[in-house]
Amino acid sequence: MERFKEKLKNRDISPTLIRLKILEYLENNTDHPGVDTVYRDLKEELPVLSKTSVYNTLNLFAEKGLAMKLTVSEGLAGFDSNPDPHFHFVCDICGIVYDLDIMPSFFRKKDIEGHAIDSIQGYFRGQCRNCRESEK
Ligand SMILES: [Zn+2]
Ligand SMILES: [Zn+2]
Image (cartoon, rainbow, N blue to C red; front, side, top):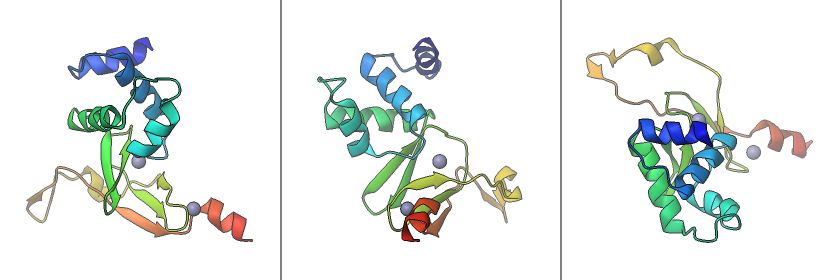
């Protein structure tokens, strides 16, 4: 918990219990959970939790650079505890978003053909390994 407290303080976020729990959850669940998933998994442990507070907390983390907000499909945002640019794989069957361990050279560039790059969101889509396995 101390580690999470430090992380929040470093970003000028006051470390409330809800924020600490959501940060911990996000770091333990790297499958890019959305507001509904975080709320569902934490509401028993935190009875004071509301969907609005989850939504606000996750957006605050994204704003402060503690997490990255991914808009994978219309109206569906997932949150990533890794704010550094990286590519994702989206499964069209189960909808899970995976991190891909690839680093194309243009990730390190600050500009491409004269355009200044602030963030990169790239997706690969298809059938994930788990779905392919269960189809066999
Ligand atoms: Zn899948
Ligand atoms: Zn990711």
